[in-house]
Image (tube, rainbow, N blue to C red; front, side, top):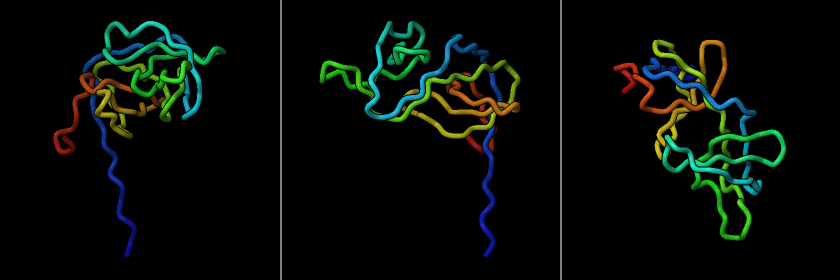
Length: 125
């Protein structure tokens, strides 16, 4: 029996986004980060950095501060994808809890796009 074909899901961007001009943060459980200000336009996100070169907006709920340090509880990458209305992106996975999709552009760049900035193909919902 032949292997099933994987169907690629895609969407059209309906809202522009320019990511912060920083080196994205790639986090693993157990990493410790420094926290900054909450994101003014996105509830539940906070600025975090690794104390070296990388920084970005991360969901506050993936950080555990109960031990006195800001320890990461889950894998996360803060890369945000620069998008313009009318652009097509490939949907890779959804983070419904935080209202975003990890997407890939036609030039193979990857990052988060807010769900409200996407119009999904009708057949894909």
